[in-house]
Length: 140
Image 1 (spheres, rainbow, N blue to C red):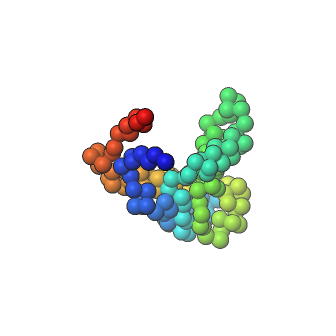
Image 2 (image 1 turned 90 degrees about the vertical axis):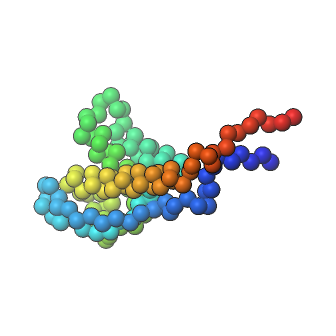
């Protein structure tokens, strides 16, 4: 077996989840949405595929989809798949499907993306250019 070092100790990676709090008023309903959520910061490949499939299911043929539907589908597919813990009201609105306030979906999506960016930045800080090993060709 050949092992190639890429300069990252996967065992030392930071946790791939983050808990955040929202306290936001719905722009249409005027209701206050508040609670703690936990999201996957960087979705693994299988979850990325599920997010993309769900988004595609919602939008169908992108050539006939308006920007509003495209964005809503992107927000919904991401938060439904990336959130791993949430307050009871999130179940009550069928994990976003029954919301009438787009700004709540957008805020949750933005928090997930913010968590991903923070995670990626922390990993980049762990990897110094000197630690990266260039793979060599196999020796015969």
